[in-house]
Image (cartoon, rainbow, N blue to C red; front, side, top):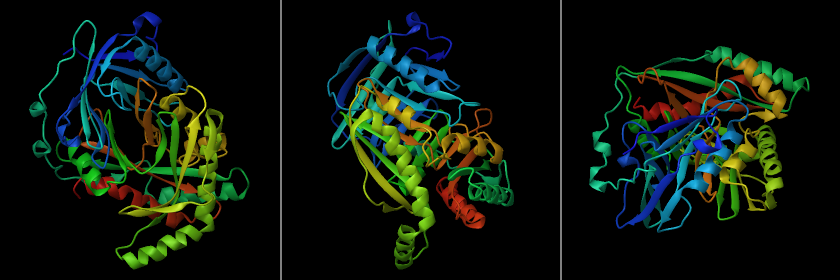
Length: 430
């Protein structure tokens, strides 16, 4: 196999684009995708056992700054156009595929697109293997029996948690400040996030929490890209053969341990003026961003309540028909940042986030997902996640955020943020 070729945004002269040799073949057996992941250079996008996982890196783009999406789109277009592809299936996610994760903010920030050497995919009763190499090398077709299994993964040991940039009390005070500014008419909504540190006695094998969170939250999209792991309930955008869909979440209530009480909580969430207002801002921002790219966008009149093991969300599924030649990656760029993770108006909310959070979000709340050479793809919002410290794999940063509007109560928002940290905390085995 060839070594990975890392390309930076200042290395994008037309002649620098590598030529990839790609082959996709169908496998005659089912594969547990997450169980095959290697301990390093692994990428994943899986929901209910279906999706894609990547092994190794054939080529990677590292990019930063306000032009990160445009640079990535340009690079992917060149790479796709020059690749030699033999695809025996021809479905979304087969052939040449890249996994990506983008920084929330323009600066600071690190974003990446990764083309693996090997991609395993599954959809329905079809499973496939894609091998990718940089010319003049030829793809190496591995034996399925050579892949690792989940039984080889060790449980994290001695995990303890500590406050990140702000204590709970400090973050609640920041929420109160945001509510005051909203009341003064400076903005309508802002999403404030907080971080939590997890420190283990020994290096953490990311496959343990990733597998556990996938088992506990099967309705979410489980992902792993360059040390960022999580399971998001929110689909920023999916593009499949011209059909555009998006799932918007905004408005949250914590679940109890009683089913009957949860039904009452769900009904109160559906009637909550505070949560409905927050949700309306998020839906409107997505619909407005999709409109220039679609011939029509269907927006349901009212949201439904999405039930997850730890919380319930107000949710709306939007759908449209693509009217231009945008790829899934370009649509994700057009949608980011939505009001669901930023606020309204966007410029004012971004300034307030930078002022009140006292931390770098990194790739939290940025687009994460995949795109193929035909432009199909799925991009979620990087929520319910943790970032493994690249300098010390014993340490992780967990993130959670809440939408703040005029009626928000700081103590209630803090409780909501703590509930949103539960998936990754539990996945670490504590």
